[in-house]
Amino acid sequence: MKIILGPPGTGKTTTLLNLIEQYLEKGVSPDRIGYFAFTRRAAHEAVDRAYKKFKLTKRDLPFFRTLHSLAFMQMGITTSQIMSAEKYADIGEWLKIGKFFGSQQVMEQGPYKDFGYGDKFLEIINIARIQKQELRSVYNASTVPLKTDWARVDYVSRGLRAWKDHHELFDYTDMLEQFCDRQLAPRLEVVFIDEAQDLSPLQWRMVELLQQNAKETYVAGDDDQAIFRYAGADVDHFIGLKGEVTVLNKSYRIPSSHHVLSQNVIRKVVGRRPKEFVPREEQGCVFWHRHSAEVDLSTGDWLLLSRTTRGAQQIEEEVRRRGHLYIYNGSKSIDHKVLEAVRLWENLRNGARLTYEQVKIVYGQMLLGTQVEYGHKTFSKGQPDQTYTLQDLQDFHGLLYSLPWDDGLGKIADRDRIYIKACLRKGESLTDDPRIRISTIHSAKGAQATNVMMLTDTMRRSYSMWRKFENEHYDEARVFYVGLTRALRNLHLIHPMFSRGYQLA
Image 1 (cartoon, rainbow, N blue to C red):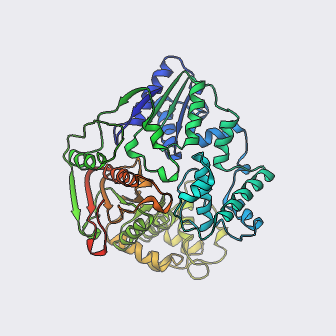
Image 2 (image 1 turned 30 degrees about the vertical axis):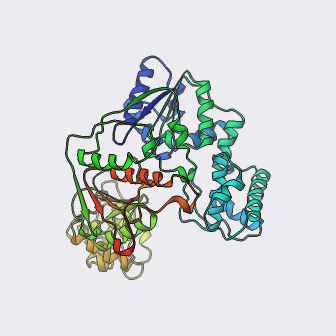
Image 3 (image 1 turned 90 degrees about the vertical axis):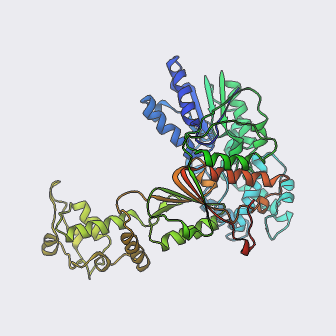
């Protein structure tokens, strides 16, 4: 086994792709190379870059995927056999516990979002399985306020299993277990495991099976960025791996001042793999602020981070109040169709001509009967090169309005209307992707931006809400470290508010 340690910004994915290229040049067939990542995002990034680098198609790289996806493929099951939120709700009814399992999307890996009590039960049950521990011991170690006793947890666990067996359904952990029990590992020439510090004991068993069937195995990761231990990750297994070790020793992201600060934090973790690497020559800047309102977000690209979902939501409210467009949880603050309708409508009023498809976007934000006539759907697509002026639409295609967008686009909600006007006053672009991304630190691993702002108020919040850990402060240090290493130039830290009882870890 060959171990590649990739500190933040050192080009770990690029290194892995360069190694893959070397094997391709040696004549190894693409379908005999396996690249497996912990998250879909990491797998998709590697696949996209591989397509461009090697001029290959998805069909050429069947084993570039997540470990869950590999198990799914090797089992030969269909998507209809995978547990969904609706099926969990059905189980809740069958167990006579009503809507015990909520309606949250079932994720490939934790944590779940916005837990109801049912989802918390599912998390405990799942952690026991992926860590290959007894459910009772995991339940005893949990400090989640389940408002129930062990008998109910055991009842739900047994009922869940019986339901899935009867209906021949599988959850994501089932797929991993089946992969291991049935030894479904494909025979590959070389295997690459990315983000290995986040793997659970069950996933490590998958890696062992893959390694047995492969001639070469590369395991890449960084234990300093292991922030999913509460969700079942076994970072100690990664730290204890034996093999030829390569440390990527040059960061292309971290400025020198950020490097000093982040190293002061991560060196407090006992038992970590030592990794000496050099930062960028650029000094970079670290700023401390008493409040996030002191940070000017009017220019540049930004990544706004919080330790908790609640903190991220507070940031979202403030950014919206300040009149900036943003992305949070993968969604834009305003639907792109709404912004496009605003832009096209004002262009139309200023004399521009719109295509049929553009007119459809504008009409989609207008009220039938008052702003556009009923029956306008008979509007012909016309010729591909045909365009329409404001007068054309008024004379022939049911348009009844010509007022500015904030009066003429009646379907836009008042709250969004006020927000869009504030964004326009701030000079925000309606066509470009938002400059600002909001995220929890856990969701931002792998991300970067020129400017980063991070709340530190909740950095001392422990994982004890999930499980009791002997060295939980080390986990918090790792989370803080990940946040400190996202900025390319400017790092803005919001100072803990001691008056409210907060203090920095």
